[in-house]
Length: 228
Length: 305
Image (cartoon, rainbow over all chains, first blue to last red; front, side, top):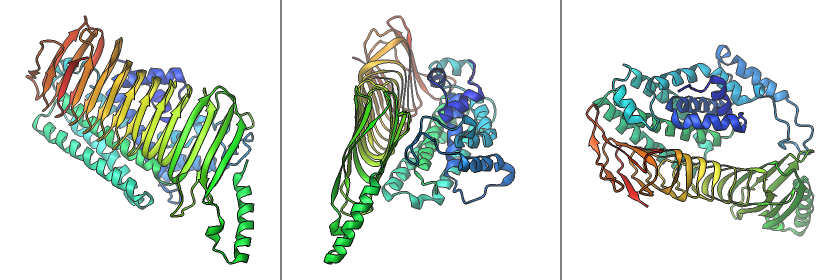
């Protein structure tokens, strides 16, 4: 199975693909856990970048491209066709100027490493049993690697949320806390089972699925934060 | 149209009058304000509504006219802004609720061209969409989302709200953390997800679909295309599939600690030899569609429809 190219992965994560390309990507993603993980990681990182307060200067060596994008974004003229400030006009900014694309580009290394790790593990397709039977021995350390990658993304997002949790309503905080606890319990159970049965591809997929849920919930919560 | 400008002038006049009469300013503002705005718009326009109010009720209705009509009521001190691009290709609507304790819910009805693409973002809200055949992107924190009709694309996300889809969509994504997802209708490309809520699918035909929960149960009843690919994943939720006995499909079921019940054939689950898991694989109707179910400790039942 050919994996999605980085351009398609990033375009999909940005929502920039046309209908045909997106349809193709969706069909592939339905079957490919590795590419799903790459998209999740990219989106999570975009959300993390988007949740950063703009008055905190990121490290120049890592964020120069993002900073340039912010500057560029500030001088992009409003759509002249709009009759009111803030109206979404028919013309959109060039793809390369969009904040998520640049944030994703700046953080591509981490996303790619997550994708590569996920692809090491693979799985997720309907013929899981056959795959497991054909390749019962997972690459040494890959389980720990995927665990570490997801955990790193999830904990980074969680930290960003924790710093600004007061901006969320108490009801939303309660919902997020409750559901994160549910997911964390599932992650603990899958990890414990994996410790007893290392190399179980189904358990790796189950653990990955829970991490995907966690990253997605954190990402969606991050999108609720004001971007002051 | 800048509704706030008119509100501002009225409010100033009322405030001045209230001060003259010695009445409190709050009493001078109407509790609710009616809205009615009409805009010429392209039939495939993108329409974006943002509601920054604690509670709102939003109804989106697709119609066969090239116009956008916004009606409803908002609080007397709430802010409403709207604008349409010169080409009519985009419209942005914005409601910001005043933080008054006695403010009622924002109630809006949007009549939109049926082929338009509509975005709605709100906090706690009841969002209903009906008759839109273009795209819907609905995002709320709490409350519920209901979609009816045959939109081409639907993305519905809630943090704690329920999502109900009655109808089919070519492309459908519904995601909630604590709420339930129900779908009456099928789709070519469907993904439903909930952390702790239940997913219920009642009828419809599916080509590619993915259903995921962490603790919520999944209950599926529907048809699957011969080339279809369906996956069901849950950590501890139970998964029940109700399908035709002779559905052309092959089944691939795995659970680590759950039970597997198969009422379609005599095939029984076996314990995998190379790892801890129970597995069941079988085919009906000569095979065709691929249906995969995986749980950690949720039970799985395949029943006759």
